[in-house]
Figure 1 (cartoon, helix red, strand yellow):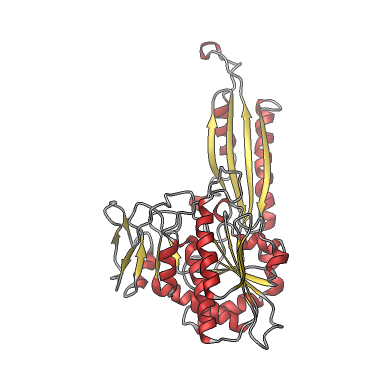
Figure 2 (cartoon, one colour; figure 1 turned 90 degrees about the vertical axis):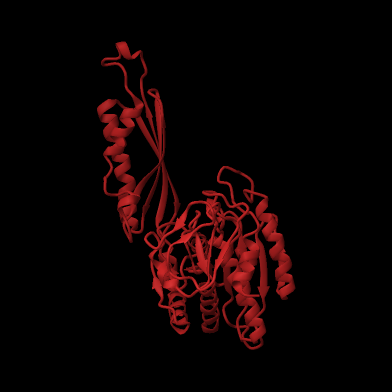
Length: 403
């Protein structure tokens, strides 16, 4: 099967995870795709195929004769789609010989535009796969799953010499849990790649340092007619506190290696206001500085309105995996060389977000991230090309030959 054929089969399975669920996996529907993949992997001839009690799917392609000493390589993608947008009843549109122009998404009234996604124009002549505007597509990350299994099938068909390949498909990546229960000692890989990026040729080994922060502001509520010098409106105090943070350090004004504070939620009454932030920066020093600035803002509010008016709790989520990849930069060099050999310009760029690869790297499995050919993830404008998927398959095959 071609990668896109597998992909179209997988996107028919609804696998959205649930950030409010405490179960593992967070949704049982992810097990539906896991069970389908177990059967497909067995049919391909992979060994030790199973889905464990947490919904993680494992399978192995043993090393070919004479390649047993090559370090075992992990190939990892995730089962779930983002809960941000409808992922049920996906109806893909296939546009052969795409003309490089704007695309109407079914009868939804939504339009995939070159203005918003400039890379679209470079896909002229390709077969473009889009949504019909009523759902996301699922390329994040069912494209990665499809490409991994296509790599395995083609290596076997072509009788390409290779070291041991360790395959894992994980649940709950989109809600931050994808790396939690991967059994690394049993998995057995020395190095790994996640196939969870966007356009083909993308190579990522840097991600944000990340933290979550909750600020609680306590107010005093009395009748507004007699409130002078008594009332403390927690909502206005919270807004004052937010205004103390650097105004240019927000998602809508930053790019590249620039970090930010992002106010995710604001709920309040006169009596109490709660603000939830995420804090991001690639530089560990600047990451610490951002956390300290938030603490200083809280201290300043308490100096103005009285001790205990505001409080903050900060919890770190994940760290930049660069420090874990730097000792094994051959993984990046392999990927860059593989891209060039496949006729794709390598794009080494930072991830302005997180990845299971980062958490796996800190757990002991160095794991940069590769593009899959898709774009516009987590919403109705998600799209991918058949040719981009084929190129992503070729890149991974060429990496394996270099191990």
